[in-house]
Image (cartoon, rainbow, N blue to C red; front, top):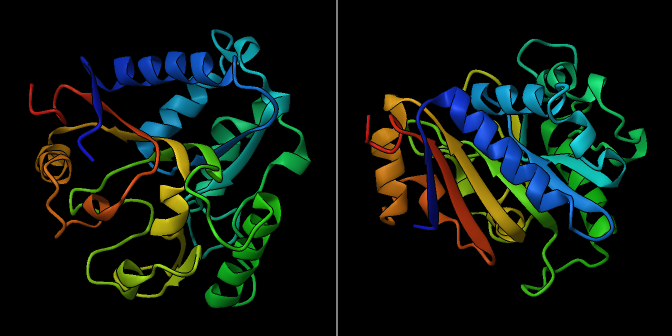
Length: 238
């Protein structure tokens, strides 16, 4: 999990660095590019930048297929919704085909919604088991909490032991129930890109990169490349 380290001066420079990397990565990729999106303030700035005049025309929006790494089990118009944040920051401003946008369902029960999203992923992947040589996602964007969680792989929750299902409900550990991709789905990525900014992330970044498996993010066993996009504070250089 040490991966490649890319450090920017501050969170704004970080967002621009990731935007440039994103354009350079998805542009040459053939066919559809499957991307799992993350919630949080740092991705929000990235999404807004990608939808801005400086980047919008440089992204092959029609070839992107978008998914989410986790979601709060709240309506799509709820201020806490990751889908709503992404829509307001980026999707409402760029021409991604609606058929290529796959938010996590938030109706019924969390367990039922997780099953439906897993069924969708298996249909798109074309198999019920992962092949390490054939990633589900081309790019997996992940944040990192100060407690070492990523997506909604939250410390102390049963989801941390899940190695069979691709998507799971998380009903404890936070104020809202959540749905999250599990370790196998996250690991089935050509590139995992962590985005973290701020001094409150420093200790978690250091622990995860050193392999401290008491933190959920450190338990990821990536099949592909890992890149850490950090600002100087999160990298412990500020």
